[in-house]
Length: 305
Image (tube, rainbow, N blue to C red; front, side, top):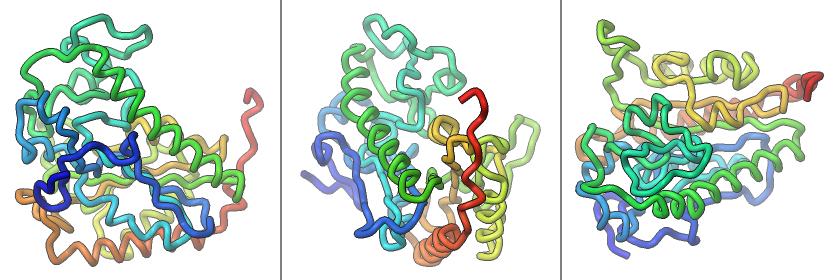
């Protein structure tokens, strides 16, 4: 195991599957926090496959988001984090969202090769780093994609699904926060639009992934902390929000994107003096969620279900 900067390790992934579970001593909350993109342990075998250095690989990372939400276990809620970097395997994608141009061999039946995310180079195995550089100098064998999906992607989702089921069993409902960070400069939805200014973007898949009262409460808590908050633009929620968020199944999911400039130096990947304040405001947000009454969030199933 070798350190490689602030919290970066070059090492085999812990636990065999690279999934970290921080569990409360007693489950006191229906809240579950997921941090799929804050991993910073780089397997040596992966580094031997890519053509870029660690600084370029980290451009896709939601640095320190797992630490910003580290309050969750102390508030009686679990926190699940990927230890592996997003460029190794992205668990906020469909399981087989793959670009056939990246691989030697035939992809499995059912692979989604035509999504917008694949076209943008950001499938389950990314083709591009966060700054648009090609990750690999040559094609990967399909077996490598399947190894990462089976060994790391599937265990993350298996454990996340178990946490959701435990919350529903204990409280009748699960409140899932999918935690991310975003660059300080966000482009508009078209080339003609000016960059947007936001401290936090909250996404609920345009109203489909959670009860509207929850998204209102989250926005109110964040605005009371002084943040400029946008909804669903430009981030409405990725695969985790879309896949798990279903109020009629008593799972309410919100994606939260935090402006990195609030807590870190984006060029050097170092926390700055604002880190503690953001961390404290996230703890207050989670406490505010815990204070909500969830009885009314337990909605009847659709008749077809």
